[in-house]
Length: 73
View (cartoon, helix red, strand yellow):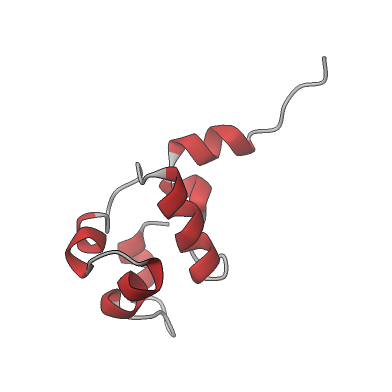
């Protein structure tokens, strides 16, 4: 789910409120509304602040790769 999709959901915070919780500007967060290549640290913080409403692995390919199951050696 993108940030834009998340923000349309019932009970979702405003862009302003979420940007404050993430410690970034509203303008920067607005730039990321449809992005799927977020910085890993920001994606993890967004997942935390939204209590899983946003999935860091869907926002950042680095997180997605890190969370992929590993084959047993």
